[in-house]
Image (cartoon, rainbow, N blue to C red):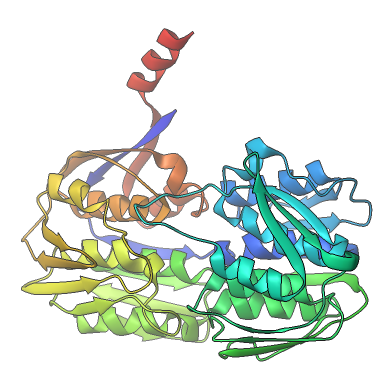
Length: 432
């Protein structure tokens, strides 16, 4: 077990390269199960969630071959089972995408209940189930597994209206529908960039999906998908996290390998805070010299401000002059990390879905814990801005979604290292 040790209070300068999008990769890899042939997937981030996805595919019988650190080839033509390993699938939230891909291709799926981050709110899959049921799937839960089976062995097209805008349900239903008989229409669909990326991946393999990126997606089922090559888009949230780090610490950093349009919702709020952002073809130059200004933020489905950036922007606003309001408009609760920021001197009060943030002059170093992926990123940002030496435990959450975060931060001047945690060593020794 390891922890991060960060000596903060230093502005950041230099360049940082953004990796492939986690939220796209963890859907596109399961979607490779729909393909009869070899998929070559490029720009894959080196993160633990991706490693788990690939291990699950191998356990099902797919052949996975690493071409280099960011490119894999997946051949799912000889899948031998539709039952996922319990111990692997329960470690990752995105394991639910295996239901859509396996049900869509083989007419059945047995997937253990998903795991991953638990940031205090319920993350139901009722909209996924609604979509699968409309397509002719029968769903039940037994022994910790979600069991799905298509009536007649193959799904059929349907009109599906999502009661709430759900990224996961939109992507899962898309995967299930591409090989279904007939036409499927998903209304009130989510519009995030990784939904468009999944549609583009599937279309490049022979699917017929139109309207991804709008609130109505139309899918004409095809008999099979063929192999091909595809490169995953850059990670919007990773880029936003480094932008937030510069906002919190000061300095100037060139954020490279991005799609600036995807960053507009984040850039707009940082500009309101007094951060300078210069847009170029595939980079953003982020600069902060003066005191941050207060602003209000409400998370919303894309193109609104992303919920996955809520902890990071709250950390930035804890250093802004004046009172800011942060409202969580996507999940019922996502504020477990606030107590950790308070340990560092932040003045934040939470009232149901709204955090009232009174800006302070500076944060002070303290030992903190990452409770989930994005909260962990917020702890890193806070430690970078704080005076003194901070320690962050629970870093396995952070490594679920950030590739080489220690090396990347060092590259822009951060004083951060990963060390063995003596407490964990002692605990392990006692257990033994």
